[in-house]
Picture (tube, one colour):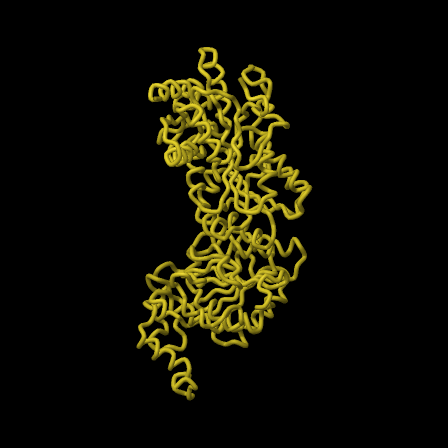
Length: 261
Length: 328
């Protein structure tokens, strides 16, 4: 996708692949054949720049043909550089300017509570995004309203555009901050799919407050030359780099043979 | 003379005309919507009383969300409510919302076509004593440049109530501009109102005043005074800034050959600019603009401020005289 597009974000989407796999293939109630089913759970991606992983997961789920992934960011595409809710089935919110998804997720959760609907809201945020004041406005309101039908996850990959998060704008102690805003806080290995699913199950069992899962992830996960490098936040790989990356991902770094070889 | 089909307040021009803030009509309209549409939800940022949302909050507490002093989040929460099927009304002072929540209005609401209604309160110089920080004079400009959004500026409390109800019953993002001060009630219950359709308040053929908001009362006063001097001034209430009524504006320009625009807003980017855009592209004629002259306001009595910055009846009369010297 990213090689075809010639621009876009590489490290974040790779780091979130396991979280999205857990959400779309285990945790969330959704039906790709009825994208506007009113009883569905809502995935709100607040860090819109990570949309390649959302697009790939939606395609894998059957919302649109996988071939369309290669149109990312190109003229005439439905897969815009940052997602648009009206462009493609399965996209719940437009995002790009950071933190806007957090407020929208709170609004959706409030609406479902007003209507006594069982739909849950799954908010995905980045860690760099926590710099935004709007995040804390939304977090404060969700805590006040005790929105237990809202579960947020923070992609704690420790990088943002200008460097490591703790250098650009320190976030720690993130857990204590959310607890102070009346949220239930869980921490997981963001690459352990059973652990991610268990965390979401625990969140569903908490009735007193909203839950945030701090998912410790490795940006660029699975690709040796990308892992942990903030330089890969906002650029795509070259054709050669992508071939190497895909080989690593498909063979679990040479541990198994790939059908694609 | 006043247009009889508009069924305007017969007390127009009299000293004892009723004076009510347009924000009151918003509160009444919201209550009406709340009763008839269970999906209507109201949000405010610690300004329930002054935005006239308090009565709704008391009557429908389960559909009221107190967001605290956090306008950016409030706009986003409203977008989320709308995407989940609600019709949220967001009320704050316009300098804060859409002032500081413009990014959220742009992406979460307008780009997403979320059915959010934004009520911008305390607009114009007439906010008076609170001073420049609280006098919204740029809100029309920043909102009307966004695609997908309807922009309505009612002239009085009755029109504000009608506009609130009309916008609540129509899908799509909308901005409603309201005033704090008591201003003359220009229209009546029987006056026709339709979003997107400007109304002819007074007939005339020598020059046209086209504008929006409570300042139209000063425009009517100017027109009635000049009528005594033999000048027939057409007065148009162009309450909907977007989508703008091109047909009526061009008709007025062809009828009179000279236009004065009036608004309590910066001349740049506001009602006058919107009208000038229409006329420049369809029927270019001389235009004079009455509005804020690229300046911030200051504290003071509204009457004194409107005189100082050139938005009172005398300023409108001056603009008419000036535009007539330019008329072919």
